[in-house]
Length: 316
Image (cartoon, rainbow, N blue to C red; front, side, top):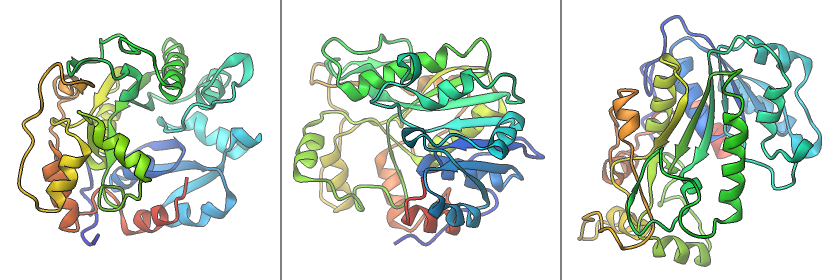
């Protein structure tokens, strides 16, 4: 199904002349950004939890480094030197359920806290819109909305809230940027490819609103922020929060659209106004319709062929 792949003008521009990006967790999102920035002359380093993934990362043009704090595998000396000299640092590593040193839950934030001075002018952490909780009665939430919602917060969301606080506590020493992403989809990861359990499928279909973003647009937001670092928190979602079953009907070609629901119908709708007003982002795929149509036509942006092959083997 995937045929058309990113060319030299991949997802979103970056500074001319390039720089060096260091990625913690070189999976779907990181390889999307790496594909875009390498086309602009950037060098990219990335961590993996297993040495068996190193060849796939090298084929993507990424310099690999082992890092698996859950098993006591820290960064080696070469990786530390690369990290200190990198102009941008990205982490997509999730928080740890088992508390680390001093009760901290994010291993990368913990590492950076003890690293000391670096050359980085941009440090990005990819979080999730789940930090807002779900009990908002269909209302819109923004970056200023209190975290946790109006009811109990799921454990995974609570861990993300704690991790965000750990990252933001570094803002005085590092240029911290937090990106609260909706459900990330794109080539190889979408409703056509997913193999959800029936229980998960029922849960997803019951969600009145699902905020999502195409990985191309997520890479574009990250790239634009790298160009103009200013710190802060950004929601990264498209214009149309919609239930999963609506997207499934769309790809099957069944009639019926999505009017966007109404306040009071449960869940939350996440606003993307800030990425447009502050970063000047114009979404390539403003709704699931444009995104899924492109995927069904074989549009594999922003990934290179090598990145697609690596993702087929789950490199992170």
